[in-house]
Image (tube, rainbow, N blue to C red):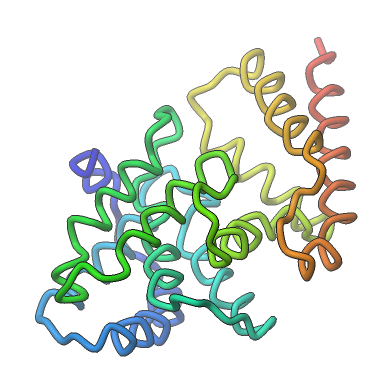
Length: 230
């Protein structure tokens, strides 16, 4: 899958790359390891996320993580795992496949020693990435639910921004016809609504839960309306 990811890769926006550079440097500083490959790997990550067909799972999505991290002054038991998970959790993103998270975790493992110089910290980052597949923590570690909450922060956007997000997701699934996409998307949103809470941490339940549920209900209604059109 890396071969396909490389084929789809494009040069990123210089502004977005520059925006993410300090966060990458912060992560490298935490790792305390210097290698010639670090800049090359950062460039590849930026190119992957600027790849053809990415309309939401792109560099803006990564930048949003770090913006939220700073805005809410979040703390992490293993900061390195947080940074690693942000940069790699969507490294492989091919909407027609069901193993993107596993392949992204494998990609992180492949590059970890070049970045960190040792294996310590890799396991938690892999578990965070794998947990994003179903948005359920795979291990009992406080960094995992907090990361998952940030990954779903977009659901609690204002209505206009949420509609942009929903449209971006539809564009990413361009290969799926409406007769399949509309009921499939409704089912995904309904499963989220069936959860006791969308967010795991008390902080983000308080800040985001109500608005996110309103947005999901509204999108389901829109999808149903589209499905009834001739």
